[in-house]
Each structure stands twice: as structure tokens, then as C-alpha cells.
Length: 186
Image: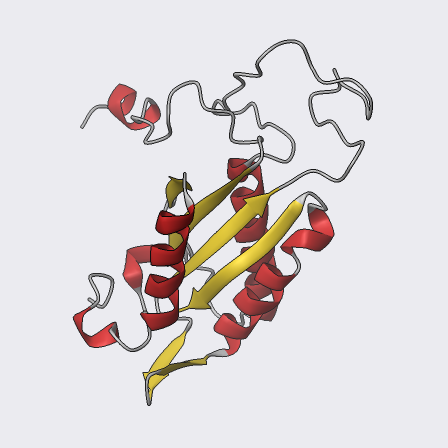
């Protein structure tokens, strides 16, 4: 693969979709080379490693850094994290800067994040911040060589209706039970 092909990756994001808008997003974040560094499945539950506990702490802290975010269901597995992130806005808050509490914006926001141009409060910014915070804390504890913790990028799915939301919640709840047949269990 040429250098040009490496720098111009094909995006899996929906073209023209505003990832800073209100919505429910299902994400999967994998460890580097899907190494089981976050814990082990014992009796159908993930027993977290030290790194897994850091991941848990940083995941729970996401709403502290992004007040427009609510964490729905989530699970930490040995080599990945599944979660539903809900982006919402408190009354009177307008991330675009165009509206106010009494007026709605008159244009549709079609912002999409580009490489090197993060959008405040967007899903990519939230995930980047989370992965960075975990990596920083893990590296502070590491006494050996700092190897990559996360696989590049992450999987995302825009949840569009209640039926899909409930199916994904169920998938997350049952993930530890189905670990032995999970596609991420390599």
C-alpha cells in the first residue's frame, strides 16, 4: 500500500451526518491487535484487569468532560468496549452557536468531522478523548515499553429507532455470556 493510500483512509461515517447532533450511537472500541488486556471472562462476567479498571473509570467520566453526553448501556470485554453514547443538549445550550433558548437555528447543520479538524462535542471527539485519557493513565502506570493500547479508529452505528436501540442493549447485556462465540474473541 502506498503512503497516499495510508493517509487517505476511507471513512465509514455517514456522509453529511452531523455527529455532534442529538442521537444514540452504538460504538465498539477494540484493543490493539485485539489483545485481551482489559480482563478475562470468568463465570460469564468480565473480571477487569488493572487496565480494564482504568477503562471503566475513564468511560464513566465521559459525561464529566462532555456535559451533553449520557451513557446508556455499556460493557467492557477482554479486548473491546461496547457502549451506547447518547448526545443530548441541556435546555438553552446550542453547540452551533446559532440558536438560543427561544429560537431554533434556521439552517441545517451538516458539519462532519475531518482529519485534523475536530468538532467540539461530536462523537469522534468524545471517542478520541476517551481513548487518549485511558492511554495516558495506562502509560503513567507502565514500567515497561509503551506499546499501543487501542486499535486505530472504532466502529459506530447511528441508532435510528427504539427497536434497534433495544436489540443493541440486549446485545451488550448478553455479550459476556456469548464470549466464547464472539467475533472479537480471537
